[in-house]
Image 1: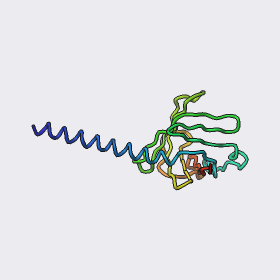
Image 2: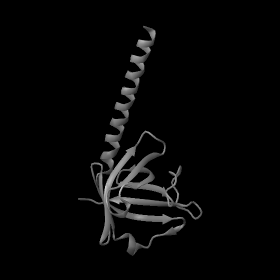
Image 3: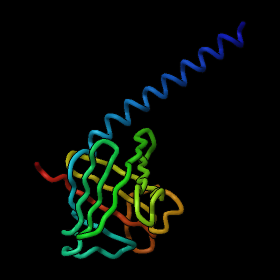
Image 4: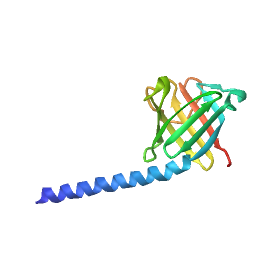
Length: 147
């Protein structure tokens, strides 16, 4: 009988944790919504030129994203886990040669500013926000466009 009660309590705890995570995901996913422009992009100490950054746009609608870079681009899903520290983002590519590829990213959003960081070799998820030389990381700062 004690085992049964412990099992029921464990399941209730796990369901409560899942509900809390789902609520956190929903709340943070709302912060991603809209169209974003690149403010800065530093890749292992090298900054992307302004002309190149101006061609890049990101639109997020629900979990779906569309990334445009001039005439090219891609689409896919943003899968987030705001319960981690730092917060985690899996960018799942939905088409083209990289279909199914998952980029391991960390993120933070402060109002209309979003910062994302990933290792350039995408073997691991970074633990800090940096794009400095020798880091092997890309640090991107995005600004939400006003409608």
